[in-house]
Length: 314
Image 1 (cartoon, helix red, strand yellow):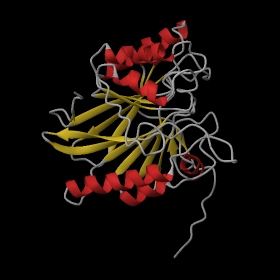
Image 2 (cartoon, helix red, strand yellow):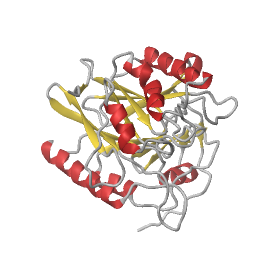
Image 3 (cartoon, one colour):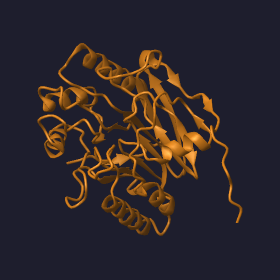
């Protein structure tokens, strides 16, 4: 039976986000990734670990199920609860998303769910965080899919049926909470097009060393988040050498920090993880980075807007 997530007695709830670990076949680079993950977990002592996609790199992996177990070993070995969403590389090998999810669910601490069978993708679900016996925060997990299935090529997007599910789910939880939205976070793999907007037009903190590889279609998920007013921040991966955070109209759009050594990186840009801390009863969160070698980064470099905004006055 899956365990409940709860705020601690001091009112805190801490999440470690690993992203793009890209485990393959147990190469030395995989061992290096596992060692980094172990060090981060020991330093942060989180209440939940979240993998935001590309846990494994399916095509080069001779045994994707074994790669999943390698990727999860540092977390499972510490008895921590964890949840995951899929990226665009996880199921490119011999196992599809359903089979990979079954492997996940066979391991201790797994909170990943398939979600409604009729929805696009695999793994659209929500986990409440309790304070006492009452839900006090929500964590949404969505499959951002892999690649475009239309003639317009590029990466996949969160589709309209998934957005409708989110809206209905958020409305249901708001009704349960007496009409007020519970503070929430959302985790998925591929960044929204709005990550480009926030970097270009608003103050951000962190680095952008590659293009924001968002889908070429804007399916409207950010608009749904804005309308519902519950999600305080979104957390993605996909782009290994971006780690910035920017506030777009009250929602913080956040990158994780690329974790895996068995994939591309950038010299001088250390692997690591993003850490997120919620406080019970507070509609906000703190976030920082924990990097290889144990460095904790609580203040990232400021990036000024690159484009002057034209403001329409009503």
